Length: 189
Ligand SMILES: [Zn+2]
Image (cartoon, rainbow, N blue to C red):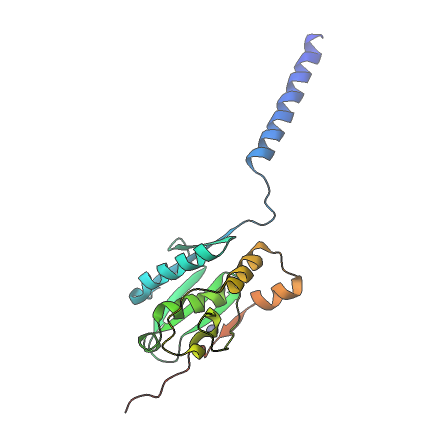
């Protein structure tokens, strides 16, 4: 082959190789895993609890990773009175408020994993079953289970994988406030 054709062939091969290399190096996943950066600067008493809750969710689910203080997808606050609650702005984004008075009555870790569950797309499910994380305070103050059930964890994984129907996703990922998960006890005095 003459030198000009040879140069063209080499150039074409280089382009093909580069394209192939790019494809191999950067496979396009069906859905990229989301990193949810949570910030505990406004909840100094519960930073350790938040880390434990993040580990529980990270171990139980796929397609998302909760990471401490790398950003502010999720801001965690501690408040006094008014009740713990979650304010989701979109899937994986929002705010969690931990009521210090409730956290002295109910398991603070269960409260934290429950409220983060709302940010991850789960609704309340007040069925009184301690094995269900989203049953919240309906399971009573003696329930300290901080782990989502397999059904709850799989639901979160599916939401973040984007494999649920559009209707199902819409009802689980929109802006919503989740209050009154932890019934107040009679105050003393
Ligand atoms: Zn709740």
